[in-house]
Image (cartoon, rainbow, N blue to C red):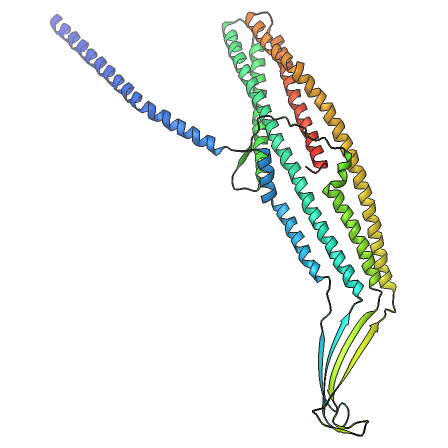
Length: 441
């Protein structure tokens, strides 16, 4: 029995030994295979990363503006309207149709005669001149509408472009804060498990990180919506992402409020005022007589007044001129009065818009000056102090010199400073964009 047990133990040891050897060999084989495929996997990951990077098609501000001006549907539509108005200029001399008539029968005697005639009605020449001037004025107004659409589009592109860059900076700030609170949460969890702190510290850290996560999710959604709006403005098949080394705009605008007179909205109102002035003259010109010109050619068979007998081969002709004088002036005077009122309203709109844009210019200049001073203070002192607060708070918390509540308060204070700086830059950019818009840039 003892020998049998010994043999059994010996067999079990041999089997275990063989099993261990098989496991070792299998493990070595898997490691070898993994080492062989590892470079391939790394290459595939690098290729995928390159493809993802290429998929992020970045675009500069100037390229964005150029693309929008060339492709935006609203601008294209305004240009089509301008082309339409240009073609209408040739309709200014809308002369009525020429009337041709022919007669056959007993016109002069018992014999059948023929008569052919041509009649042309005409307005007084000055009517056609004013009609053409009015249509030219409408065409110029359409051109001003195109220019206004373009300057408004530039403003929208700049706002969308720099708003995205602003949100990108917000995202970086939140991600940095998230990383910082992840480290804090890890330490708080370890301290809580070891009994060095209570549940309040752990819960506070967890809540702080949850708040950052909510803000990041909302921010990512806002950025996606903004990119959709950006794509709509550019109207391209390629999805572009705004790219710039500096999310703070440079203000190269040194003009004064005198540039307001060159703004398309002011020029458009000036052109509308000119149109109603010409239109009033046109309505007055319609009071002038209409002209009628006629010519007829006919036969008179038989003996004429000169006692001479005439056959069909002899033709007689006559010319006619007539004047159409308006006898009922009520409708004409009403149209003239309406046009004068439109002219006065156009003048008032021009004055109102000029005053409004001057006020907007002064407001934007004051805002720019205020935000520029604020940003200068942040960049020279406050931002450095905020970073110093974070570094000192982290060091003191690690050394145990401050508790978690003090660390959270100091950290949130520094984060708030950085966040206010970003908001200040955003407001500075908005004031510069408004100045560029008002100066037609």
